[in-house]
Image (cartoon, rainbow, N blue to C red; front, top):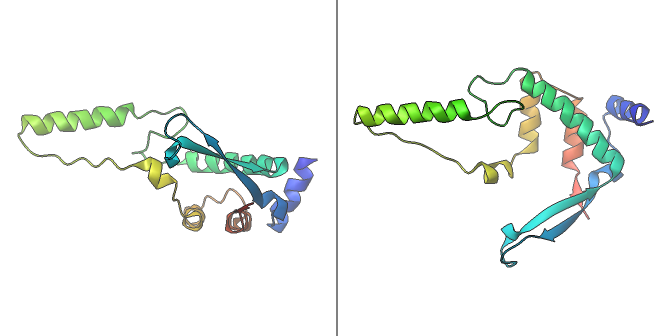
Length: 148
């Protein structure tokens, strides 16, 4: 049943409006409740919309993981950051041996990934020739997503 429905959505590149709406619920965590980081946001969305988004996510992951950059080991399935950490350690040790300075940048990716521009992301996917779904599905899904 879902397959037939998803196929029509795929062909028409239009996601049902109900699937784009959600209710944002804040759940308290431990700690000072006056601080925003002590809350967790949960989005309640429709079940068919969630299943469809999972299908899209799996297709995108397969496409993106097919040809990752050589420098990227972390944040990939079956890969770890161990090689990058070892490389950084070797560079630091060589810098100390040669009495030279070293500059290390450690960005806060937790905050950075909260602010991904969806349009730029999908444009990049198309540019890299990795469209896992018709681009209309991606853009309409995220351009009209709203919380009730």
